[in-house]
Image (cartoon, rainbow, N blue to C red; front, side, top):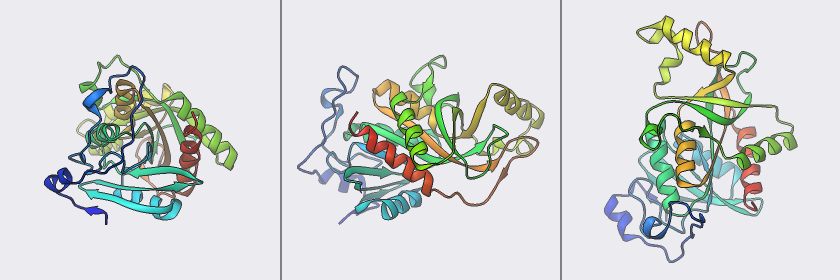
Length: 281
């Protein structure tokens, strides 16, 4: 039976016989970094989740992905904002684990998933458009991200770039092309405050409008709340991290708008196809 809302003591008592081994060839993850016990926040132990993992923010979206796209899906754990599942996609073992909203909780998820042996991650989420040509429902693939958040600064100085894994970027683009899904590739923006996307919601609306205009002139395509920290942490820990998002808001201009509920089918299929490609790389 899956662990639902497991306590830390319950997690400590559950140790599977099998483990996934982490092979990072000279990276900082060696020796005792890979643990044998379920992790404190995600409540997952080594051997319970495959190395290839999708990272949605919304716990219920993790469930929908597992139930709708995995074969033989199994729930692993539900603990705090971290809901996790495993299964098969076209014969490849894959996992999904929600991260919650924002960089702090996403970084916790990534750290602990790495510790239990995961090596390849694709964030699948939503973003607001900065590029004027983007519309609700469009797919965006990030090559990197503006570090307008605080979490990544705890890992590396601000001069350190937040860059997606090139192999994942290529796999996402190839998968989108193969499915006939239109996409835009470029630099994303990661923020800490969701409502800063709405200039009228902050204390200095004019400054915020000017900031979004600056990002637009720099050809930043979309804004969200996790990718920069995930990219920096992926570089520091020497694992592969990428992001694909579906646009849910009209372009930030005078006033941002959220338009409808996101449709994640194409996003999920493109990301799973990309994970399948990465399984052999």
